Length: 172
Image (cartoon, rainbow, N blue to C red; front, top):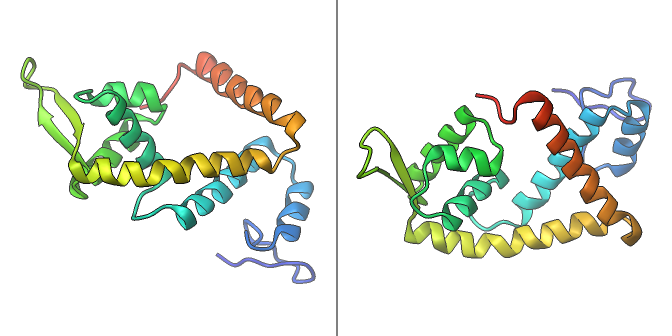
């Protein structure tokens, strides 16, 4: 994918993230909420990757956190708590099991089902990554004036809640 800039006549799909002026100009040219949310996620993911120890993504962190809060939960519980669709959650769990961060075992009461638990390695990584995630959350909010932070969070929660209610929550 080519990325251009001022004077090049070719913006590609996205301006380079490192060039905030180009990103701001491009976003001003196309003020789509969907695009802006996607761009915000890209920037947040990059910040997370720059600060996170190891080889974990924000979605993997969400899965690990969910399992740590409810050891022995099943895949459906992870899906409901994270809001990540079933196929993506299944793939994330498989990756985390391969990385030896999660343990997946058959449920003793229902051998058709599986339960998830953190491994010792998963606990150690989670303990190291959680402060990074909290600092990233704080940094993201600090990018807004203090008076707008609470309304921003309310707006995000409202968007998620309203769209999940209208469209039945997470898709498969």
